[in-house]
Image (cartoon, rainbow, N blue to C red; front, side, top):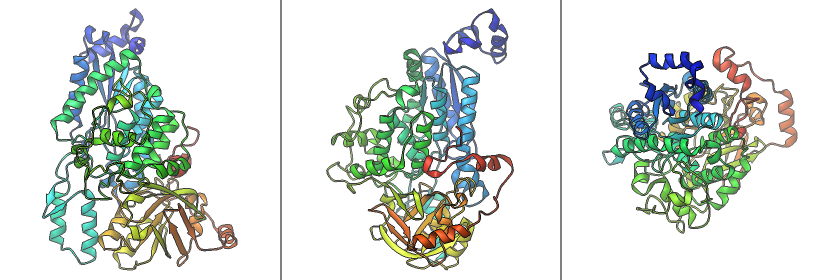
Length: 554
């Protein structure tokens, strides 16, 4: 066993003495030591209950003859961090989570690791760590939050943001906003739509590192506890067979993940995280492959924010495995790949079927013949930009309008709430990229303000920052290179006409090449906003969004 280096032989008596100091018996020490990376905290609704998940995992490990050893991992709640300096730290924590799990996993020579994430950056951070450590690993997430009906409307976290926009527009009262606040998030779990957390939990299942159901079984269902016990038992089988992440995280597995991403209409943040995870596995994902896969994989689901369904509905309709089965009917996936079940993708879906075709469309009757995410390129985004096509109103798929330029999220929000943005405008928010932010903040506040004020079918927003999975509308992010790196978005001026053509993958400022060059020759990088601490170091090391915002030299 890998753990023999800390427990076997007379020479390891000092190591065993430390284990015994914590109450471990000789019998427990002799068994495989299984690390449990638990991101439980009291600041993230999706993580408040992970102690219960960890206890179930431990029960499963013990039933299967192993010894569970729990350690902690940090996490930021993107919703609570939204709209202020805190959001600068969100994406940056992905690397901290990966680094800390790697450190704990390798420093203590665990024979296997069970990862317990749930929300936005914790899932990809742990997946990156699993690829690095490369010991038998399995993921069991905390599960999605429920969405409940209130006064005839299915509410979710995003509903509250849009309610604030409606209040600012004079179409909702403060009391009505309070009702949304009190009812939109009814309990524990990752926010209920196909936002970033649930996107990544579903894609973990597709990658093969989570058991069927990992992405969709609601947090409050007893089935989630049973699934956690199964994960604890299954890790022992993976250890016995020495099935490691490197056996599962293959190039074809990432192609599967991207295909299901398109079918589900996942968060645009998946375009940041999948390349970063692949990078850790020694695989490079070029943005062009995303459009290639999107061109042939239909969009089968419209979950919030793209539609009115939520992850609980996807669960009831058959879950991720049913989506995989539906895509397999047209040969759109690799079915011979290994997963943590010990079976192939094809074997896992053998008994899966769609139970509700109003939630998961038939492969022959999709919402659209192309996927939910599109990559755009043009003179202001030569290295690419990303949009959640499935959440864009049809009338905004092609749009031209004058640029309204802001050098921070805060400036843009003040203008939106101040009624200074009108129909036809293209809001430009720059210097919010990985380096410029630093930290590449999510722009849920401005996009929700636009939607709440009834402008989402008339106003586009483009940024070198990123968006929450809850964002809807013509919101185009990850513009690369970012402004702080001297990307051409830095040259856009107030009133420039911005042309957006999502079906054809184009985004351009209607100015000549010569004028663009002249403006960039005059451009000077502004002073960094933060130079000290973790974010100061992060800003110096982080790469472009087009490469997954991984760190240089890693």
